[in-house]
Length: 425
Image 1 (tube, helix red, strand yellow):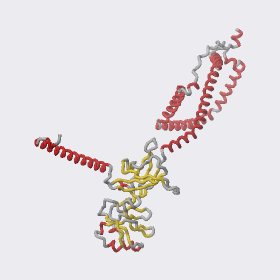
Image 2 (cartoon, one colour; image 1 turned 180 degrees about the vertical axis):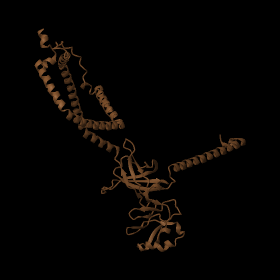
Image 3 (cartoon, rainbow, N blue to C red; image 1 turned 30 degrees about the vertical axis):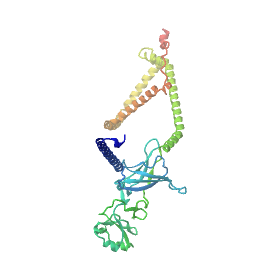
Image 4 (cartoon, one colour; image 1 turned 120 degrees about the horizontal axis):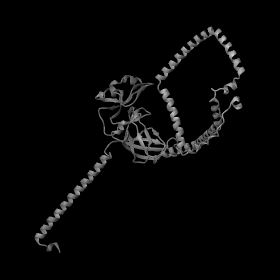
């Protein structure tokens, strides 16, 4: 149906509906654009697109585990990111890989000329590595944001707001340092600077700060050079690189392979020692069983020593007993005559015993003061016994300690020894 065929009322209502739909689409489009712009702004703010970034670079032996976009760590948090990794030319034999990275505001303020280094460390066991920069300890900042100027000594005296200006270079006369960077001009003797041969000096206004870098430190020249973003070469941080996990594992495997024969030889020697010990204990058991009859005979012989005709009369017959009595009588006389000498000897021995008592008392005091001595000896004996018992229970050495054999049946009773009188009777 054509629009002209509609009634005026329907055409009026349709035009109103079209206008409403048009306004709705326009508002939805505006809201969509505003949401997209807010998303872009929020993402840029979160990722630091609006922050000032200071570029740095370093050299590494290998780019293993590194790639552009990886975070750069500082004191445990992400301070920037890697922007470029590329190999050096083939005729460069000192440095292998060029790594460029940026640090976001205000993280570059921690990087100074002394103490700050780029460290390549292991991040995980899969070969991933991370670039970490360390906080500076001394020196000067690598970048400055103050207006930088080169002025003559006459202009330096006429600078406006003279107390706000500071040096931007090292000024030395021979080996003597006259002025250091960041030192105020008010403390600098310009006459000494002129006497050192300087006609111009580099200064910066410390009271004024720009948003972008104005100068970069030159380690070789000892001064700040003018910085132009995208043109000036970044600041070079020396690197401390640790090997990748794969290289460390390979070195560890090599060491294990080198040490494994020695370990096997040691275990073989230990097994030999344990086998010899087991054989020795078995031989001792055999010797003890073989000596049991002799011990029984000795016990039977000593049991009748206090009876007539016992072993004492075998060893000392009647005539020998009389001779022994005469000998003892003569010995008594000799002892009587030697009483005086014996008295002196006893006195000397008494002094010796006194000295010995003093020594033993000192030893007793040492033992009482060092109570841990006996405890250490006891602990050592206990631990040694526990170690041997543990070896007996360990499955690898259990066969070296065979179980105790059943006791042998008692030997036939041995007839006691008889004296000649008992034999005749």
